[in-house]
Image (cartoon, rainbow, N blue to C red):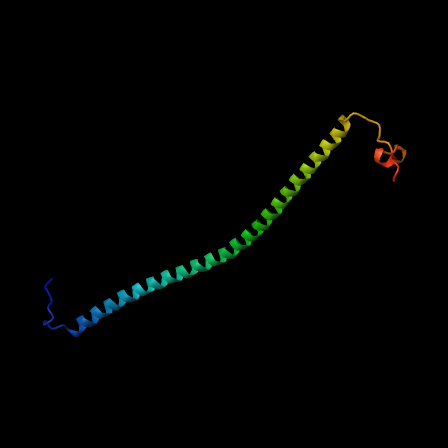
Length: 118
């Protein structure tokens, strides 16, 4: 193919065909870019919709975790109290039975109360 120089004359038909080919290439590239932009837009909308579901799932999971921790804490506290009560009951069973202390009205007065007041 011979080399074309700027000083060589170009026919109108040749110029029109080159411009039409360039226009077709630009149109093709523009349609490809529009297709890519459309796919990106659709993906972003899908991700945004997924984020709503994810947010809802995270909130429900957080509430479930809080309720689970509260139930575990209540269970542990109940078990500790039950253990202490069982220890007290066992202590009462193992203590030797002794006579109940006498009533204060049956006791004789001590040395300070028996001494006459001057």
